[in-house]
Length: 167
Length: 112
Image (tube, rainbow over all chains, first blue to last red):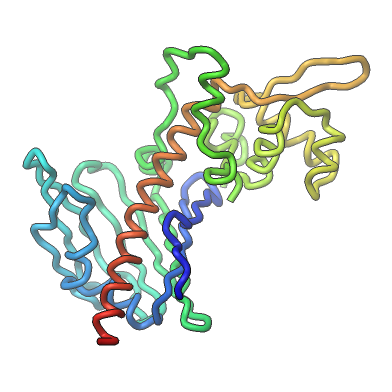
């Protein structure tokens, strides 16, 4: 039996411009690499339901571009795109990451894979070019208008172990 | 990386893993510096320095009791942080769980 790893992603903020995400998969590295880099696979998991992928193209070579277009429930079209800077199957890709919803934001996404005993660890490092870009991803401040009873605030804290601030 | 900005931004204040550990320890309740030092593998000067940064952005507050200074979380400042973190973790987990399910599906097909 393979363990259920749902909800087990580790998210860290090593510095003010980066987000680091780590997750293990019960699958061989070559399959994980294919699922992350081939359009026939990415189109299957790339959009968050009810969003639907409408276009997915990946030219997997250094200098090659990728584009992932999806449409939301209300018909709005969004896209991610960028250029591959490094391609080393089946362990690593580095690509630029641009989202048409945040035209001022540019990030470099490094994906690193490592397999041990049939378990593949995926590490994604998102490095934003500047703090304005990172703030899009990490915006949480500035909406502190109504603070109710402390009990309610404490009650709203997620399960302390499940969403620990330290990673 | 500019260090000075840690004091002006809640997010930067928690970008440091040690400071997140201190916040975790304080989730259990108000504590003196010595008790935090005992709970974590950090020196007293390190803990004091991190507490100063956390106080400056308003994530922890401090009160004096006799010769001790007791630190506690400032929930009003923490709430948006937690909400954001939970949302962000949820978003990533949803995405990665979808990849996981898809990988399992591909592999079970391959075995048939």
